[in-house]
Image 1 (cartoon, rainbow, N blue to C red):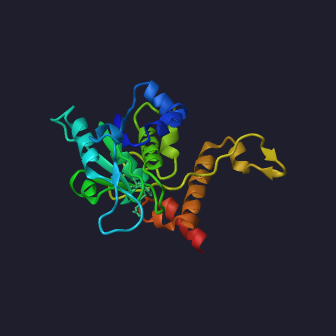
Image 2 (image 1 turned 60 degrees about the horizontal axis):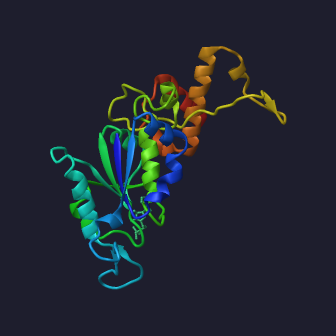
Image 3 (image 1 turned 90 degrees about the vertical axis):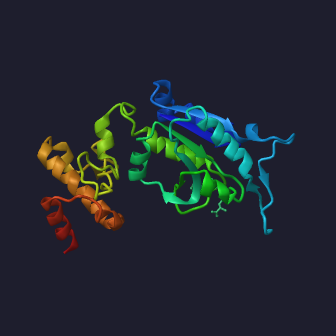
Length: 253
Ligand code: SAH
């Protein structure tokens, strides 16, 4: 999967590409991250990317021309293909695991990182095919959101995680074969490792029992309970078994 990132701070991505999942995935050829300096698409001596807002007010706004030029240059590399163009924006649709799953289907994505007061609205209206937000808060630029989007997406690509099973158990993961009406999985169950007793706090007995069916049931119930307490909004979209329902009812009474 190829990511083309349009940014005024290409060097911002240096350290995240040198560590962990993004480093491994790019080294192994599962993903390629191409950085494009927005200033390379300006046409004045000062390489100007921003200007004052029409109508007055504080701050600066990204001009449309360099962004259109950058995207059009990338599109012309593969003119026959439709290429998703994502503007990172607090006004976009929320990035969820389901959205990450959807993005992971694409062969290539262009990501536009805003700065300052934001981006001339004509980019959102006539250039971007999608706007994505990483949460209901405002950051100073789209670079961190682009990094978040890439990490969430790349870890879903086949072969990237050493252990495919671990991904299936993660919070929000929708089990394979789930009907499309269900867009969410549960929060993950609690995890423990050695020592079995730490400062008098003991690991739940069942995890030491070696009884796989008991462990499966305990984990499922813990995940259901956590989700019910912390994120009841998710539960409505999770496929539940009869056994799950009985457990949830027992919690409610
Ligand atoms: N004035 C804008 C915010 C601009 S923040 C508003 O209130 O909607 C500057 C840039 O940071 C944005 O153009 C966007 O690219 C990025 N950004 C900030 N918060 C973000 C978020 N929650 N999700 C995605 N991108 C975000």
